[in-house]
Structures are given as C-alpha cells and as structure tokens.
Length: 489
Image (cartoon, rainbow, N blue to C red; front, top):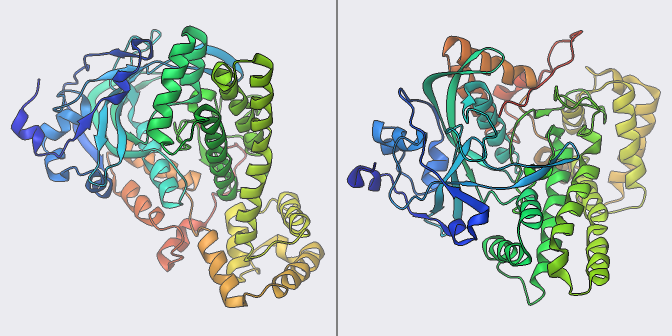
C-alpha cells in the first residue's frame, strides 16, 4: 500500500503511542479507498509547522495519503473508542467516520494527532456510511482556522479533499475528507468510556497516558493534578469563546478535550446580535447549548470527568468524592476570573476594581435591550465610532460612558495604552455567518473556492484592523427566518 520513496519525501515522522493503551480503547482498521480524490483546500503554513512538504502532499501521492488511499510509513491506522453524554443522555460512541493516521512528531518536538475525517466506516459507525459531506468539512476548515487566528486553542485543518463520490443525506451531496490536526483526541468521553466499559486498570492507564501526553510536570498526586489542570484549561477556553461570541452548538462530553482545545465544529456559529439565549443549532430545541449556558455546561461536563477519576483520586470513596466535588467547584471562579479579565481588556482596563463587574453588566444589558451587534459594539468603543449605532444615542449609554471614562482615568496607563489594549482584545472580524454561508455555497454549487480563500485571508489576522477588513464587519441583513446550522460534521 505504500511507496516508501515518495512518502518519505512528505516529511512524515509518525508514532503511534495511543496504541500502547489497552485494546479496549481502539480498533485497528484498513482505510476505505476513494476513487477520484481532488485536493480543494490545503494549509501550507500548518504543513510547514508540522515538518511536511506541501508540494509533495499536493501531488497525487500526497493526496492519496490525505484520503486514506495510501498509508504513510510509520502509520498504524486506528479508530478510537469513546462514549459521551449527548444532550445529557449517555451513549456509546467512537470514531464512526474518522481514522487516526498516527501522531506526527514535529521539528519542534511536539506530538500531534493526524486524523482523517470522513474516511469511511469503522467498527463504531453504528450503521452510518462513515463518510462526510463537503460543506461541513469546509465549515470546519474555515472556523477552526479563524479560531486559531483569534488566539483560541483549537484543533486545526490541514486539508480538504473531495472524494469524487456522492453521499446520501437528505439529498445527494459531494463527499469529502478533512485532515484534522489536534494535540490529541482524548476527550471527557474517552474517560467515560473507560469508566463504564473498562476496569480500574484501564482508567489508570488512560489517565497515565493523558498525563504523559499533556501534563508531564505532574507531581506524585498526578490524578488530582490531571483533574485540576483540565478544569483550568477548560475554564480559560470557554471564557475565550464567550469573549468573541462563539457558540459551539454541541457541547457534549465527547466534544470536550483533555488538552483544552476546541474540537468538532458541527453546528457552530458566531453571535451577531447580543443575546445570551442565542442558539443556532437546528437540533438544540431546548437551548441547552445556548451562548449563555456554555459556562454552566462546561462545569457539568467536568463533573462527569471527575466522576471517572474517583477510583484514582482516593482509596476511600467518600474522600474521593469530596476531593472531586471541591475541585470541580473551582471551575466557576476560574471561568469568571478569565472572562472578567478578558472583558476588562476589551474595555481598555488594566487594573482591577470591584465596580468593574457592574460596569460590564450594564453594557451587556444595554446591548441586549437594543439588540446591538456584539463584535461591532466593542469595535465602536475601541475606535469611538458611535454615530451609526442606536445604542450609543440613548441616555443609558451616555451615563454609562461617563462611568467608563471615569474608570479609565483611575488607572496609571494613559489613553493610548488603553486604546492599544482594546485593539488587541477586540477583533475587527469574525467568521460572520452570512459570509461563511456565501463561501460554502460558492464552493459547493459553483466549485469556486476564491470566496473561501479571500475569507480565510481576511480572518487570518483579526486584530489587524485594516481597511480591507471593513466590508467583512457588516452583519447580515435583517431576515424573518432565524439563522440555523446543522450537525453535519
């Protein structure tokens, strides 16, 4: 299946440490070939950082690897097993349409997963075809790269390849395979799987692996350290989501990583009009994963993670439970501290005062009342361009602005420093939903990828505040139909 000379030129430096875990956690698989692959998206900067030769990967031999038609040297293709609470209901899951090619050791010595998504059936497909449609793969490419540019921990996208085959969903859709790069694919759901279908030794092997992979500086109390660190990373991650108005859409426990990266860009979207109840996902009927619920859901998910570690935290069950509860209870404060720090920065505030929280809450309340655009409100504050927004002409805002300016005057930093802090904290552009949809439609229906490529260029440096970005800051025109996303990835 391999051509050693050609594959070696790509720069693959693969290891398969996940296969050192008990076989409970994975199934070795033979990739499902596709007939007419065509490379449509390729991330050259990411390839270079991974030590991969982009020119060779763009060749027929390289594309064969990016579709599973050819296995690179050192690869041991496998599908990972995991479980998860999906909308609160526990179920057995696993990589139903993905395979782990291996772990690339980068020139910097980092270890990252290389996963093909949409690569075909696995033992965990549960009756599915194991394939993916082009649109959702392109959506993940756009959003994950935008998140990376925003400075938010995330999996990334190396490529999208069309398969030349149609897949059946509600209609016939073009098939595609995306190559995803992640610090790892260890999830809260992986630990839930171990706790429900494994023994204590399996949980311990998984926890030891997670510590070695992501938290090698853990001391003798490693399992408690693991719980603490995952909570810290997730608190910081969700705070970053909230600060840019990102709505994940499907915060199931299988979509919460142990590494602290954002993963699985299914029905995700960015909020335009500020409203904590905003939901875009067509399947989130009850609003479980609404924007304002994301911190609470993250805490709930982390409680499920803590439950899986109870056998490792203490021999005494009551002591283990108390330790887990006390540790998880820290999430709320950790999240709030990260979010409040970020909100201060968005308003140009360097130091801390007890009045900061009421000041921020008053602004958000006004934004909700007047249906203000979340991103553009902070841009208007940054650049003092108030005249185009209804909110800024109200008596409430005039009073609030006086309070804000008085607050800024009480810190040592001057107005220039505050302005720069706001520029660095308030993105000029986000992946506006109508822009993403336009890019996807051009690619899917016309085969025109210029719209996506231009959008990616604009999103690549969201804090640049260039003239070229200006036209991408405009929200979608008002519509009687609410914007909806669908869980197609």
